[in-house]
Image (cartoon, rainbow, N blue to C red; front, side, top):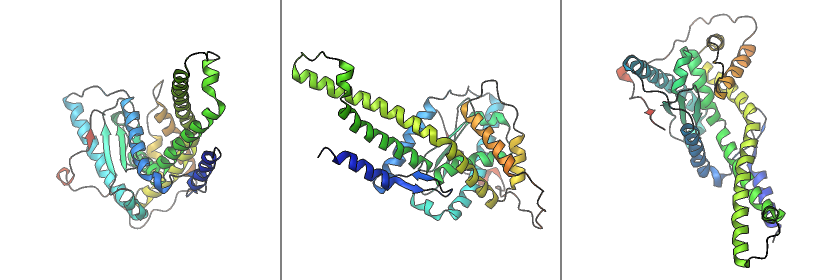
Length: 306
């Protein structure tokens, strides 16, 4: 019977492996874990938000600028969401709509969950992004959702957690941690051993899953970039315009957050992708589909504080 848990783990691994659109072997949540995946990714997103520094309270003029920024997010997000649901009809089986939220966080950044929530940090407004560049930021985060990257992260955490719970008792780690002080009462020793095993296994599984997810992250970002450019093209944005506007982002701060560095890597790859002879302009130029007036928009989805 002791062989059953490892066999179950191997079966779970086999069931979780699938091929992403970019022909990368990707871990995806088995059907029984899909509901848990949405809850876990929502918790993970909120944990990321509560650990980020809050933006200072805005003055009158800044509050008006924040309001205008929120409306831009909603207009661009609604345009991209319409294309996303047309390109990926199966999204309706996962969540009914995308929800776009602006979080009052100081530094530029973004987050999302597998349930369709996309969060942009207030600090992005300081980058002065054109609509094309802002659409890329939104589309890239949406693509993480569409491409199942959150499900992959959750499955990784579950598998690492299961492996830790299996391996640590087998290795008898509590005995190594507590040494040879085994002359106490048997019940107390057993209880201490169980608590130690659980605590160490939990810490190891958390650290292990974070490290493994970090190793997936660069490829996930590249996949999201490619899908984002497809969404933008379908929504009427020109790829060269997107690349030019991204390259116009001002220089980063001396100590930029990791998200900003990640964005700059995306900018370099998109610029390289768009190199080559210019394409002829189409006869009918697609224009931005924006609301006729501010009243046509729903109220901004701004959550504060997280």
